[in-house]
Amino acid sequence: MTYSRIQQRALEVLEPGRSGDLYSKITDYLIAALVILNIMAVTLESVSDFSVTYASQFYFFEVFSVVIFSVEYLLRVWACAARSDPGTKLFGSYRLGYIFSFSGLIDMVSIIPFYLQALFPGLDLRVLRTLRLLRIFKLSNYNTAIEDLFSAIYEERKSFIAALYLLVIAFVLTSSLIYFAETKAQPDKFGSIPD
Image (cartoon, rainbow, N blue to C red; front, side):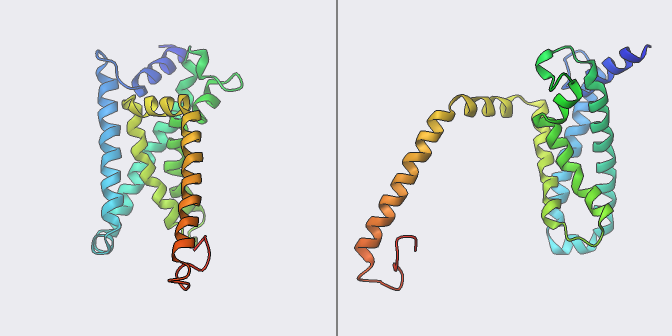
């Protein structure tokens, strides 16, 4: 096999499976299962009894997951150069197109907290570690529903802006009415409109 054929085959295996490609389907199922197990692990790790009792198991599972997700990410960055769709290029590069795509950003952001924790062990990165939950969006690679939702939101953005504008007006008006109606009866609770 030539270099370009290996790259093309890696892309085919990593992309959501086609009905006839066994390796692609297996990869899809394994990545989806790992994502689901990660969400379960993050959730269970938040329970103090589990967190203390199974701390080493959670850590080793996280290391295993990050290794798999990192290899997957690097392979995707490498293999995406085999694409032929010009719509996936960014500044003339398929790799930049992938790195800054929704999927690429989710893939990157879901592994970064682990590496930051490894580089800066004294830092409290609990908030960043919750970014591991973003791995659930990796499942959207295998379902077009999320992409369809974002597309619909983008197409209806003017309607959403108008609705937000009306919501702000309604909020200010009702806050003002409540203030004027209740300020004399409960001055400690309604001292001003923002209260």
